[in-house]
Amino acid sequence: MKRTSCALALALVGALLVLQPVGTTLAQETIKQLALNAKQVEGFIAAQKDLAELAKKIEGTKSDQPDPKAQAEVEAIAKKHGFKDFADYDDVGSNIDMILANIDADTKKFVPPQEALKKEIASVTADKSINETERTKLLEELNDSLKTAPKVEHPANIQLIEGYFDKLVAVLQ
Image (cartoon, rainbow, N blue to C red; front, top):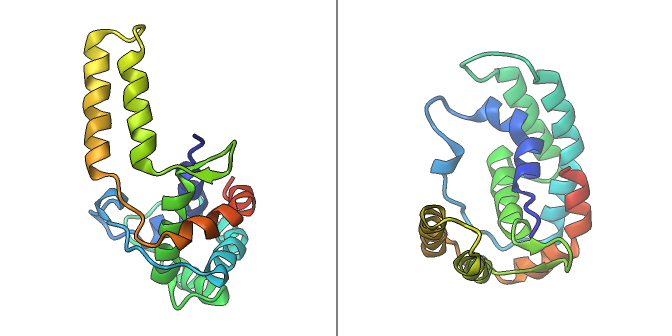
């Protein structure tokens, strides 16, 4: 399964670093699941070019404090593409990523995280080339992931994101 989470993170890194409060991490955030619509997905796709250009502009700037000018630009980009603010854009992006990260690149179909993790657990269990210590560690991590894997609250998002899969992958690379 091809993971595009990294691509999404790279596409947004400049903007997110600008807005990230000191002392917090993205991992601390939980996804606020939304029922997405085509307008939101299209706005997200359209915003990528502007955000990438902004990220290039601010690349290499070093500061512990967010740049107010860059923050204003990020907010303007979000509004330009139909979002009420960057937080709204970010919520939509997180929901897109949650689905996109679980779409098989070959079949372009969503594989529920629980199902993918169960297959991975079976694969690791059956793989005799992995030493016992490493297998135990991998299985522990996979089982922990299985317990915490989010369930999709809005199943209609799956079909929507599958329909935009190629466009999303193209702009997030």
